[in-house]
Length: 275
Image (cartoon, rainbow, N blue to C red; front, side, top):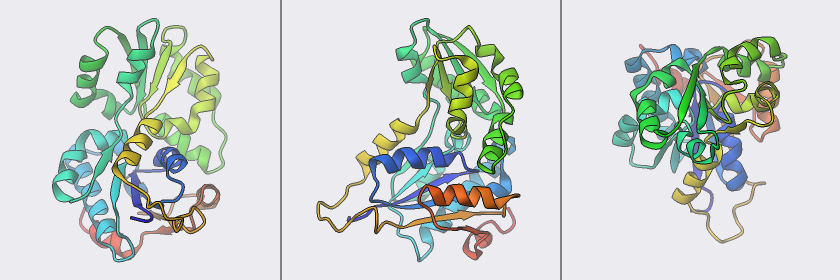
């Protein structure tokens, strides 16, 4: 293929952190970004509704005549821990999911005390418990489940200041205890600088962005011909609802390579009818 078509999906803007990591490795690819902000945050949805919504939207984009998707990236830890088996059964193309970076965190921790910062749903999922059992059984894992940081990251990209006092209160269990902190939600790397300032420079922050980018690269290939360039690649963004204070968010999305966001396009609205 000359330019792979990559679909990146999240409930909000968190998946943009994954997009940025993938784009660093594949600057010449075509990107479609879809965020289901109508149902944001996913950590508050029941499992059945979450799987149904994600599958319906991903299928709709893949079937839309303007797209010829080669690979799907579910850039949401909460969704990935549930929806990957369903999507891989329904789609005849690679589906990559994002899961908390427990394995690399356990490997690099010197104190063998690691932190997991994620949504309450991700912290409580059996999938996450199995990751800890498989890769961090020699570590003490300090877990904090929060949706407040998800909202905080969304507000940051809409031009609002981050409340450092509120952030410090959420991160207090990690202060002075862990030496490695897993950012187990794709929204959280958008707050990396603020989180680092609270927990201290001695704490290593780790997320899944680079690992996901490597995985995507391994599953797609660019033609060696010079026809594919960043200048000719296409970047489309869709949302299921118009966000409050859309201007700042739209400016940010444009700044990282996308054209204007298409809110509630007909083909997506049809796929979610009744859900």
